[in-house]
Amino acid sequence: MHPALQNFDIICTICLYVHYKSLPALASTCRIFERPALDVLWKNLQSVEPLVKCLPSDLFGTELGRMAGLPILYDHPLLTVLLKPLDAKTWGILYKYTSRVHSITQSDRLTVIEPLGSLMLSCPSAPASLFPNLRRLQWDADGTQCAAEFLRMAFVPTLLSLNMHISSASSIFLSVLSSLGTLCPHLQALNMWLPSTPSDLVRKTSPFVAQSILQLRCLEVLQVWDLGNQGNEHLMQLPALDTLWLDLKTSSAWERQSLLQSPGFHNLNSLILFIDNFKYASDFLRSLSLYCHNHTINRL
Image 1: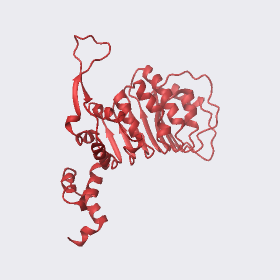
Image 2 (image 1 turned 90 degrees about the vertical axis):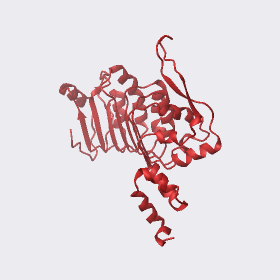
Image 3 (image 1 turned 180 degrees about the horizontal axis):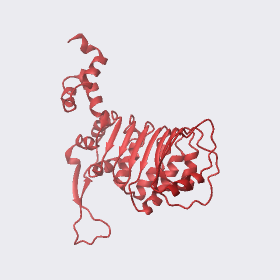
Image 4 (image 1 turned 135 degrees about the vertical axis):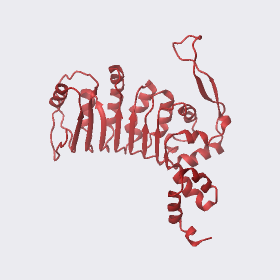
């Protein structure tokens, strides 16, 4: 064996330059390359689909689903269902890979989430143990029950950055979302956006987002829509908040009964507003009672 292959740092560097599709083959070449190659392979997932593919294919099946409100004569979607429980060996294989994941990017392919959601409910360990090293999560998918089941396992104490674009939200999804501050106490960056949707979704979602934000004491960067008086009071009390991106185009449409009188925004350095109505933006700024303590709002 070449002496260079006895240096773990050199082996890790080699793995960083190996083509992504060649990493599985490299990991199976010998034990020396297995650990560093798997670390690189699983570190940044562009989908959770690889987690499903690493499991035995006979775990899952399909059955005809039934959507509420639709009569039997309508076509109903096929749902992925769990056919049998995972044994200890299979859980061990899953843990071997999930423990290496540092970031997850999930698009709107929720068919991949369905089988994982079923597994999450049967996980024998504590929720935070499945992704113990997860640092960044980007969620561009609907807020279904399956999504909530998966996110309950992905909201871990190590999470530092969360980017969520939500086009719908079930009650279970909102319940999990409201616990974000407790589950991810070290979160530093949060991007929470809703598309141009009816105001009822905004009103439905805002209280749960406001509740979760209140507990994020380490949050430094926040992108969110206007959460109304109560939500904005929570924003003002975030002790570490440095940069706030506020979308006034997607508004909670709550009437402002009074000015926000509580001192706040103690460490805010940048405030960026997205507006399509100057009068509304002016009214919003007038509703703020800013007590500047060693900070300057330098962008608007």
